[in-house]
Image (cartoon, rainbow, N blue to C red; front, side):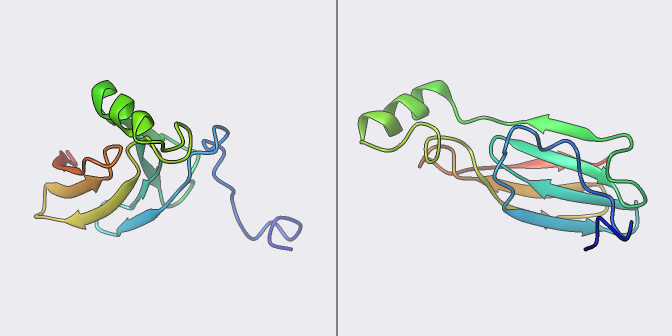
Amino acid sequence: DLLLSNSCIPFMGSTEGLDFRTLLLDEERGRLLVGAKDHIFLLNLVDVNKNVKKIYWPAAKEKVELCKLAGKDAHTECANFIRVLQPYNRTHVYVCGTGAFHPLCGYIELG
């Protein structure tokens, strides 16, 4: 119904089926951060398809191999699923991902 009434703008950058899990609204900069499988998207709040920035953050290859050896599914479990997007200060966001069952965290500078 939303699409038919032109009440929304669908995000077109998700053609890969990236398993979106977490969101962080950054009203001050007019952006939405979206955590997905191996990616973090920075979207414009006015038009989510305009000036899309994407950070590719996969799990380390050796961690993916260990995950597969443990019997996990390579496509649905052995990746870096972004689970935490948390404001840290005015310039950085704290980010954590599953890292193919070896969690890892870091900071993103929003400059």
